[in-house]
Amino acid sequence: MSDARAIEAVTKTLLHLIGESVNDSGLGFGGAVKVIAQPPHEVRTEIEPLQCNLFLYRTEVDAALRNADPLDLLPGESGDPALPLVLHYLITPYIQGGRDTDAHRVLGLAVRAIHEQTLLTSARLTDSGPFSNVAAQLDRIRITWQPLGESDIYSLWSAFQAPYRLSAAFEVRAVLIDSRRPRRAPVPVLKRGAADQGPVAQGDIASPFPELQSAAPQNNQASAHPGEAVLLHGAKLGASSARVELTHPLLAAPLVIPASGVAADSVRFTLPAAGVPAGLWSVALILTDTVAGEEVSTSTNGVPLSVAPRVTSGMPMTVARDPAGAATVHLTCDPPVLAGQPVVLIADGRSVAEKRTDTATPVTGTALTFVIAAAAPGRHLLRLRVGGVDSRLVDRSQPKPRFDPTQTLTVT
Image (cartoon, rainbow, N blue to C red; front, side, top):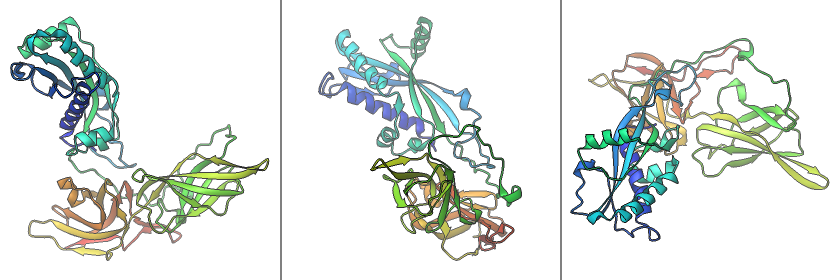
């Protein structure tokens, strides 16, 4: 989830890290050092007495990730790989009057700041580069020191056409820049085999601890709606009481709700009707028993649970194309979209991002707008994807699954 301004955001984050270190009130210069990002031959020492320059002198493609599929692709979907960049930086202090000891002090403070940040955290990237969504990329951005030999130093400073100065080099990997080409999202398979189950692998050695294996929404659906019952399957789940802990990546604290129907291999609970945003949740159990007169609680592992959005505006839907051939779709959904959740409308196999994402505006609330350029006339199966989970397209209430005829969009 990175855009073309990811390099700029990473550079500004590094500048802030170095600036905080060299200008702190302890060992630093108390605000006297100007932290810049300029080519070495353009740095002017006659203007500023104390400077620390961060120069991006080389970019390359990370070969290990060059052809890797995006991590947020769902099974069966395809999309262009992101561009994985490795950024090579040079830190160089510039001091007036040839005071080498001050230059050594600036360099030491700067490299300590980089050494302490082996990972660029999402919070750092968001604070320093709010104009880019590089903080949302799934791969972590790591900082690694890069040793330079004599030939490397000679080649670099000869290319700079500037006198050599004491420097330190490091690399930042990998900064992902996503492709703007739309992804392909085929319609799901109606049935995979007997009882609609794929291959199952079973270990020979059973764990002595309670564990969860899966979370099954009702009617064999792939996802649950708020207010619906969910059945947890596992082993050694028997206890005098059980609570369900639901964790969502965009909520500060987990939801803890009581469970019912506690058995050795299954536990049932009902999702709250409100306050449960769509997306991928993690479900764990807290089992409580009385041992030697004391209550002992045990937490199980977490299993994924998909909570699907509903399209609450009139369905099926009919939309007319404008003179340019584009179809604008206005709809409402439930639960409301949280800021930071990607929102996509999928008509048959074509995906369209929510209109506000084109202007880098966070999508929130229940009112959504999508513009389908060059929309094909006719009837299309419609899915709303919020936080990586699709609205229900398949009706499994009958013996044979079928596509829900109400989940369609007709373009005229």
